[in-house]
Length: 443
Image (cartoon, one colour):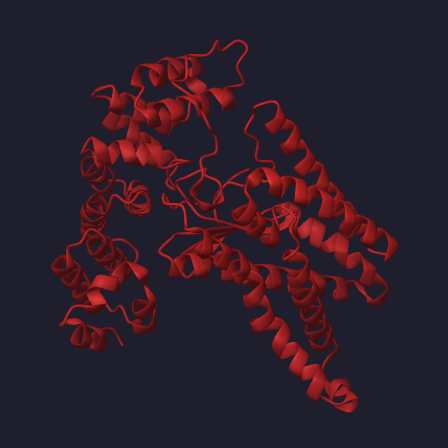
């Protein structure tokens, strides 16, 4: 799928797949007898309910210092994290539970209170569309939150069971519970729900069969929008490769798999293997893979290749490996300058993406230096860029520079004291004696 976001909320990119709207409408056809506008209200409430649920996961990850991104797709929604470090078990469980808790508190509880306190006559005074919206939000955020806690992968309960019992036992539990839930749905006039759970049972069965044959399959993998990762939820890699990958025979190797192998080889430091596979891909190779392989090989054309890649795809590469190569070779700032100083201005967005990706890759010093280049190139929001540079300096352990850039952000009009109060990256800054005065400027 394309991984470009449609919008962001609190720096959490969100993408809506067309299948999400289609499946939402199919579920809403049950209300078609009440009018097509009621079906549209159902779809809108579905969007709000699932987005709020996933934002619960996203903000929980943010509390624990992990970036996140949201995809709304045919199964509902998923929050993925491109963070390099895996959360500890207790934190991971809390992140999994945060979605349902958020939906229950923010959407179900207020609607429940309304229906409990408002008389029938009061409800009749509401516009019909408003009443339907309240009713749908009440239903969705109660029953979908409960369903999400079932121990079925990839639902939240399935993630909790995976943390507690391990992936092998979780898959077996998931298949059994999904079959039981599907049968219950069919006997209770919930046909779509029945097919949904039986599909999840089948996918868990596929994973079990793959594991028995020695393969590592994730039937529920979704790429994050506008994040430089192509990683599974909680930072696991898309592709597990045992040993050093060998150059494949391109006539029989699926190009997408070959590209994964090339990235894996580059990640493991086997530059010759990565170069052989990339050459075999020819013009079909990812431009960032070409650039990263050339840079790792010492090819002087790498800088131009990176510049061309970021101009063509300003959102950046599909994983963190190219970014790590740039940081490891000390070339990140050079590439950022080439992008920022292009006379046609077409490289500034790519330079900003590079800054973000370096921060996600925990290359905080490089992210701060690249952010300085981006700031000098007059980005659309100098205040936001200065704030992000401050975050990178803080994570790099340079509190003085972090405070300097927060002051610069304040000079440029940054006013978000509540955001700064809760930003995990700025924990060391908030412990500094200079913080109270600085916070006053940001209020």
